Amino acid sequence: MTSDPSLFPDASGADVADVDETLPTGAPLAARMRPRSLDEFVGQTHVVGPRTALRVAIAKKAVPSIVLWGPPGTGKTTLARLIAMETGARFVQLSAVSAGVADLRRAVAQAQQSAKGGRRTILFIDEIHRFNKAQQDAVLPSVERGDVVLIGATTENPSFEVNKALLSRSRVFVLHQLDEAALGAIVDRAAADSERGLGGRVRFAESARARLLALAGGDARSALNALELAAQIAAARGADAPVTANDVEQAMQQRALRYDRAGDEHYDVISAFIKSVRGSDPHAAVYWLARMLEAGEDPMFVARRLVILASEDVGLADPTALSVAVSAHAAAHAIGMPEAIYPLVEATLYLALAPKSNSGLRAYSAAAGAVEEHGSLPVPLHLRNAVTGLMRQLGYGKGYQYAHDFADAKIDQQHLPDELRDSTFYTPSDQGREKRT
Image (cartoon, rainbow, N blue to C red; front, side):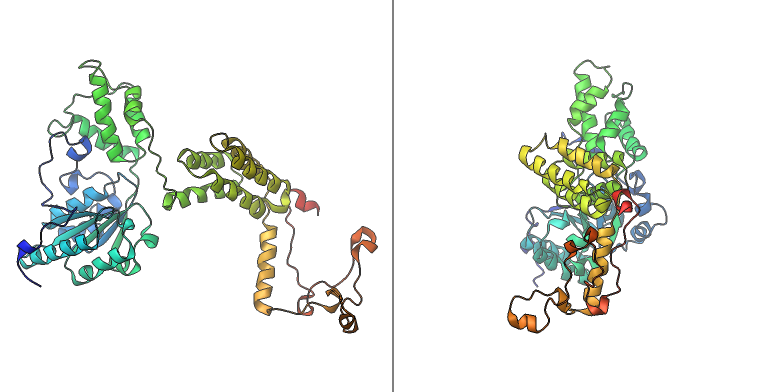
């Protein structure tokens, strides 16, 4: 490969920097307050606290390729930039939304030139889960050779979204949603900082700060940008006007519910919903229902889960539950949102409060196990239909007892194959109607 650096211009769409570049005039507060050192980095002590593996690797300037997985506003991009700064590496940022294979190859070529001068390159790929297989495969050889130190950032579970070969060559660090203490420290620093922040010009009216932290939902970027706008709203009333809870609500407009209908949050919340109904907790069940619907989940997805829950977890303890769930499904489909909330919440609470039995599932699992173990056992002759003379001659249907000819329609007759004649698959629970069967 040629060694002329001029042949490798900056990758299209890439941010190539020494990390400490000057921000443009009017940069958002969240950008201005980006931590300048690991000591300023708030939260995620389980990842970058003293004596953690990553902190030690940074100190030794021997950071491996890593994937940072966490919700928005938890510091993934900031941490990547700090790692580059602390280790003296060149920082190249690509967005998986806009970058292609050609951009990756150009960035790697630049990194190879930089390495000849003794400087490593950190290739930061934001939203790496949006890279397709071909794009991820393109960066793999460079990671293996050490041409770049890859830092990928993702809000999605990398187990599902990142190429297994690439993942096996990287360490995954999970960043958590910031708690109120960490978020409060970030907000207070921004409010007081006279160089980059609001320079003490902000004071909070009662409950305004708490409202800001609550609405931000653990997202530092959202909190800081809302603080800046709320301060502007307050200043319009007068230089000494405090930021009120109403200012905060106007600035935030609406809590940004962290929920991706195709991602981890989707599966986590529906899992919590199902387990709350199954656990007979109506309060939690309706909370998770609201989390889904308020974030824009498809109401029919929820309705289908309710039908499954009615059969799987309520079952014969209350057979009416299935009718309630099916009716809620039909009603939600007929009327649509927002009124679909009514049948969905009714069915949710009914199922949460109903007695529970999974005897049907257990019976089927046991029967399926017998099928797998014994294969296709022959149907007993007396249970077979004799539709031709030959079949009758062979004994089909001989000795069959018609249940309705007997009291209570109950008969002592073998209905299982000979090999399973003494097997028991269904065991009633002691819940609801089932305990009376």
